[in-house]
Amino acid sequence: MTVAIDGPASSGKSTVAKKIADHLDLIYVDSGAMYRAITYIAIKNQLDLTDQNAIVNELNQLVIDFKRSDNGQMVYCNDVEVTMDIRQNDVTNAVSLVAAHPDVRTVLVQRQREMASSKNVIMDGRDIGTVVLPDASVKIFLVASVDERAERRHKENLEKGIESDLTKLKQEIRERDHKDSTRKVSPLKKADDAVEIDTTALSIEEVTGKIESIIFEKYPEYQK
Ligand code: DC
Image 1: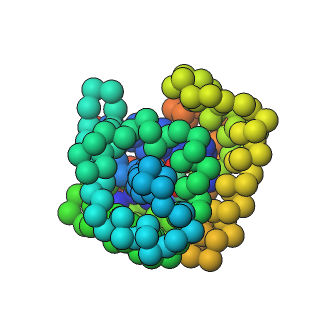
Image 2: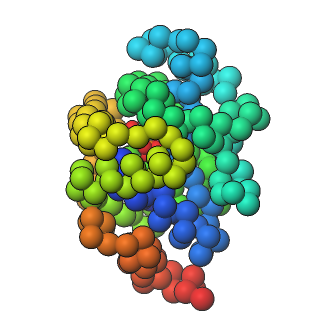
């Protein structure tokens, strides 16, 4: 089984995907973390972020891994744990630029498909239902208002001890939406066969419940 969850920044994708992965024993693949990981390494190595070839060369030497731990899922770059580093503001603000390079996407899409080829996965991102896993068994597209998404990200940042300014966050979310939806390669777009859920007024449990009902309709054997 493959479940694709797409949607804009802070629409709740990763939170619900992790919960569903836990409930139904699926492997959770955070594709955004992969774009963040290469962006983090490129910044760390002072690469020119507009230099696609330099970034792809770096990516070809970079192993990005996810490992489960008691503190949730950890992200590793060549065996170094980078879970928090890739969530910092410098990475968040640069990642759209790196994710717009077609060759970077080709490499990461290939790795994402490999991860889904032999396991039951739930994968979240922007182009999972449209490009990475067009044959996904279940496709969900989550949306929420900019204000709601900024509030969520603000709360999340404060909880993680990351500096946060709500007005700036709204502006950054708008900019990121614009960049992610207007880029030439694999823009953020709802797949024709995806189910759209507006999460603005819904709790995490309500969104999780709705998606699980959609999965159970197709795979009753997953309903315990
Ligand atoms: O979901 P996120 O905020 O962690 O994603 C980080 C960035 O990566 C986001 O600006 C868009 C990009 N991204 C992408 O282009 N394609 C994906 N499948 C996932 C994320």
